[in-house]
Amino acid sequence: MLDVGKWPIFSLCSSEEIKLIRQACVFGSAGNEVLYTTENDEVFVLGMNCSGCLGTGDMQSTIEPRRLDSLCGKKIACLSYGSGPHVVLATEEYVLLYYDYDDIILLDLWSTLCEPALFIFLVEGEVYTWGHNAYSQLGNGTTNHGFVPCQVSTNLVNKKVIEVACGSHHSMVLTSDGELFPLLNIYFELYIIKPSLMTILLQQVYTWGYNNSGQVGSGSTANQPIPRRVTSCLQNKIVVNIACGQMCSMAVVENGEVYVWGYNGNGQLGLGSSGNQPTPCRIAALQGIRVQRVACGYAHTLVLTDEGQIYAWGANSYGQLGTGNKSNQSYPTTVIVDKDRVIEIAACHSAHTSAAKTQSGQVYMWGQCRGQSVTFPHLTHFACTDDVFACFATPAVMWRLLSVEPDDHLTVAQSLKKEFDNPETADLKFLVDGKYIHVHKVLLKISVQSLFMFCRCEHFRSILNNDDEIIEMSEFSYPVYRAFLEYLYTDNIRLPPEDAIGLLDLATLYRENRLKKLCQQTIKQGICEENAIALLSAAVKYEAQDLEEFCFRFCINHLTVVTQTQGFADMDHDLLKNFISKASRVGAFRN
Image 1 (cartoon, rainbow, N blue to C red):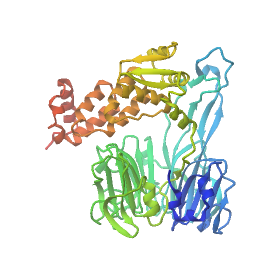
Image 2: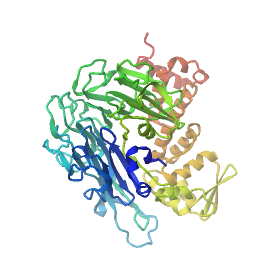
Image 3: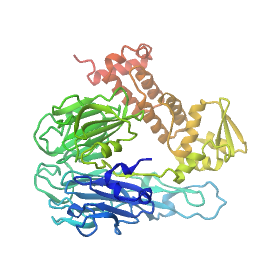
C-alpha cells in the first residue's frame, strides 16, 4: 500500500486520520498544503493556505485538518494545482436517465422474474476552482482570489471532465460530452442502448488564465478570464491526454501526435527552436512515433510511446532529460532506461525531477534529486513513481492525485476477482489440459450475456445452459482458457505476451472485441526484433488491425535488425510481398 506518510506534511496528521485517507494531493511552493478525502467521501485540507488555496474561506494556516463542507460527498475524479497556488478540481457523478422501451434492447436472462426496473446513467461532473487568481486562472471572469471552491460553469456545462492540468498561472481541462452506459438491475436483466442512440464523443481542450507566452493557445498573449476551447490544429481532433509546464501546454491526440503551445525559451515545445508558440503546433520530429502520454516538468517535457520508449526535450540544467549531460534540447531525444519497456512517466511543473516505471516494476529517477543533479536514469528501491517525488523532489509535492486503498479493504470487483478459481465456492469446473478451473455459473451467465451482446457466441452460451458440473475444453490451452475465464470476472487479462496470441485467437473466434483489444495491448508489450514478424503475421491472421499497424511500424523502425532475423527469412510469401509494398510506400527503402 502506498504510504502517504512519506510526504512531510502528513506528519501533522494522526495515524488514525492517515488510515482513513483514500485520495490525497500535496501541493504548494514548498509542499506545505494538502487536500485529502476519506473513506466516507469527506474532504479535508491542511497547511499554510497561501492565497487561500485551502478553500476554507480565509487565509489562515492550519496545522489541524479542516473539513471542506462544499466538496464533501462528491466523487473527486481529478485534481491539479498551480504555483500561486490555485487549485482545479473535477468531480464525477452519475445522473439517472429514462428512455422509452422502444429505444432499448432487452437481453432477458430470466424472463420469469418480476418486471425489471430500468437504470441508465449519464456520467457528468463539475469543475471547481479556488486560490490565487491574479491572472484569471480560476476561470470565473475576475482577478479576485477565491477563498472557497466555486464551480466553473462557463462553457463547461454538460461536459464530463476527463483530465485537468495547471501551469504556473493557467489552467487546462480535457472534456467529453458525457457518457451513457447501462447497468445490471437487481433482477439481472440488462438494458443496452441501441447503436442508433450511440454517438462519437468529442474530447476537447479548454484553457484559461495567464497567457503572456501564448500558453492558453488563443493566438494572442491576452489573458483568458473564462474557459475557451482550444481550436486551431486541434479542431475536430480527439485529444486523449494533456499536460502543462510552467508556461506551456501539451496535448496528445488519438493518433499519437503531440501538439504544443506557449513558452519555448528552453526548447520545451520540442519544435527545434526557442520561439514562443501562441497556437497548437504539431511536433514534426515525432513523425511516425505514436505517443501515448505526455508529462511536463518546470521547463522540460517527457513523452511515452506505444513501444514503451521515452523521449525528452527542453531545459536540462539538472540533468532532467536523462541524456547524460546538462545541455538543453529543443528536439525530442531518446532516454535510455535500461532495456526494459517503460509503462509510466512522471514529472511536475513545479519541479526539475523526472521518474519512470518499467514493465517489470522497476522505478527510475533523474534530474534534481535532493539538490543533486542526476543526469542518467537511476534505479531506485521504490515501488512507484510517486515515492520519487515524496523523497527526492524539490518541493516534495505529488505529481498526480493519489488513490489509496487500505490493505484490508476489498471492493465488489476485488471480491469477485478473489473468488475466481476458488474450489470452495464454485459450482462449475472447466477441465483443460488435465487441469481444473473453478467458476460460478451464475456469474458467467451474467458476464457472457453482457460481454457478447453484439456477438455470436452461441457455443459458449450453450455450454453454460446445460446441467453438467464438469465441462471439458480442448480448443485452447490451459493458460489461455484460464485467462479468458478470469477476464469474465475481472474485465482484465493477466498472462504473458507470448500466451496472449492464443487468447487473441479465442477472442476472434468468440467475437469479443474488448478482449481482442486487451490482447493486442498485451502482445505489444512483448514485441522485439526477433518476434516482430511472427506477431505481424498473427495480427494479419486474426484481423487485429491495431496490432498489425503497431507491428509494421516497429519493423520499419528496426528494419535492419528485423530483416536479419529467422522470422523474416521464413516469412509467408504473400505477407512478405504486402510488407515490402507497404514499406516502400512509406519510404523505408530510400537512401
